Image (cartoon, rainbow, N blue to C red; front, side, top):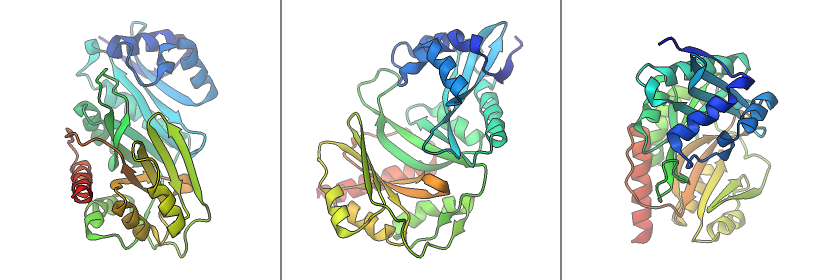
Length: 303
């Protein structure tokens, strides 16, 4: 069977939608994939840059670069799916490499990938494509497999341009997992002062996403007092006071989730609270270490 890897064409939309329905039934997280017209619209607008694996006019695989207008220099490698009839032929890897080359051509500085923790194949794909694990997003999304428990996500990052990490005075437990990241991404001296900003918040179902640049005591107390029944993700700007702020948030029950890309080539520390305590099937040592740290901090706070 001859299979071609190529850029998406408008006539592929119905086949892409049928592929997602064949694999995930009605449980896929992003409902746009069930509407061929939305698939065409996203690609026409440049929000998605899709690639497909096609044989005899049949769509057997799909992946896309998902552009976020708030992060114009980066894209997420997402919407990866291969039909069971075509698995074992390296299609997911071929689609990923095709889109990585497209990311370079688009002048992007970073690609990210969200790997479902219960799906070992996605974790192996990210490693094969050269992504480095930077974060663990606990209870991040509803299960795409119809399970009642939310799925945790392993965040991988692949720099297409230089993206060094500020060298801050983190505690020993943080330095343990940060060391391989600074080897992979490089490091720069810490900034003389933190970014000029404040506080932002957005709601995504049960999850609250908080952006924190002002790390004064008053701001930290406000964040610590957010409703205990919500899953709270705090993206902490890496200014000179970030280690102190992270420690204060950990005292309030937050756990370390690693690093996530920030705006304008920056990095942010991720801290979270309100997640479950289930065991995760993680193949990456760094993700496993972050999971262990989260359990240790949660146990210490509960004691």
